[in-house]
Each structure stands twice: as C-alpha cells, then as structure tokens.
Image 1 (cartoon, rainbow, N blue to C red):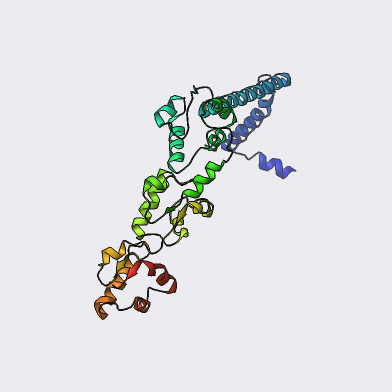
Image 2 (cartoon, rainbow, N blue to C red):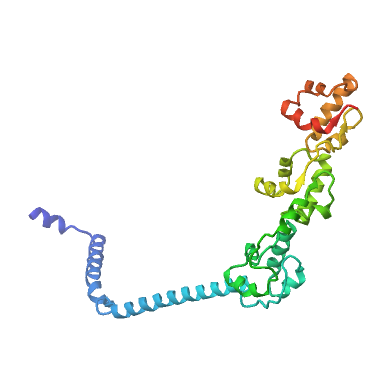
Length: 297
C-alpha cells in the first residue's frame, strides 16, 4: 500500500493534466442524459388519429376504384357505339362503307364490316349480323328493326331448284359467276382465279386449301355448286420452257426448275416424263404432284 501511494506521489504534471481531463469527460457524459430528458421526451402517439387516417386512405382507394370502373364502362360503351348509333333502314349485303359509318360506327368497325363482306361473308338473316365481333346484344337489339333481312329462312322449292341449277366448272368460270356460289364473295373469287392462273388449273378440291381461309368445312359447303375438269389444264413443256417459266409454278419452284433444265442440257430433250425421276430433287410425291402440269410434247 505504501508502495502504491509512493508511486502515485511521483506522477508528473503532464500525467496529472491527463487524469484531470479524463475525469471531466466522465462527468460530462454522466450528466448528458439528465440535461436531455426535459427536451427529448418520447411523444405518445394518438392512435385515434391514426385510425381516422387509415379509414380516410381506404375510402380514397375505394373511390378511385369506383371511378376507374365507371371510366372503363364509359369507354366500353363508347367503343361499342351504343350511345352514338343513329340507325336507319339498311341491307348489310349492299350498304357501302360511307353509309355504314353514318350510323355511328367507328372507322375500325366499318373496315372490319367491309373486310368480312369482301372475304365472302353473306348475311342471310338479321341474326347473321351478330357474327360481327363488335355487335353485342345491345347493338343488335337496337339495329334489328332496321335490318332489311328476314328473321329466318324457310327453304322453298324455288330455292332448291336454284341450287340444283347452279353448277360451275372451276377451271373455266369467270368471277361474275363464281361469286354466285354461297360462301364465295368477291375476295375469295379473286384469290381462286389468281391461284388458278399460277397453277394452270385445278385438279382437286383440296388445292383450294392453298388459299388462306379455305378449310374442309368451307370446301364441303361449296362442293355441291362446283365441278372440276382436270383435263382443262395449262401445261408446261419441259423441253421448251426456260428456268424462269418453270420456276413460276407453285409446285416446281426455282431449285427444281434449274435441275430440270440442266438435265435437259446434259442429256437432250426429255422423251418420257418418267425421266424426271432420275433427278435427285424429285421423289414420288413431287413427281405425282407436278405430273398433271407438265408435258414433253
């Protein structure tokens, strides 16, 4: 103990200064909480106000949701044209785009209507008008009294007689007679004649499937009204035709036309059509497909 106080009595001035400063710092940090307490008291939250604020925010969200639904409904009604339609008597098979738009339909709806009719769509009864995607029940009920078509069709003997008498040959028919076939309008008639010119003529009904929109159902519908004479075909003489002429045919194309031409250049004119089977690009399927459209004479 004496040794401790003896050592303590030998502390120099600099060390005393350090001890003094350290003591002041300890006292300062000890009284800081006592000084801050009156000024930084924890505020008690008003939970009643928080509940009121929460309810107000919820009400605002519900109001916004209702407004959005009202706006959406108004836009939908405007899109369907319910409020803007001003109908008058019309035949949907004859009315033009200008008059159709006069009733209050939009440009998009009018173009869709014209496209439907150009693709061969025919309106037989009033209810056929509902096939248009933009015609809902409300629009139909509004327009039905003005549509100059029967509510339903009862087939008479005259109708059956007309069907029995309507029979066209697909390789010789013109567009005016072709559009008389139920299901074939001006647009489809045009596409049929374009394909017929490219092929050189039709040999089978299934070739119509090369045209967009033709399926088994449509072909079965028009079959009773058309016939095909496979002997009325414009053929390509492979001993005379150049590469460009042969390549135009949908079943031959550019690569096969080059192969046909080169073989002729190397071996002379074809004597028989079966010689085409010597070409690497021709298998039995392709040979049978192009056979009706080529000749060596």
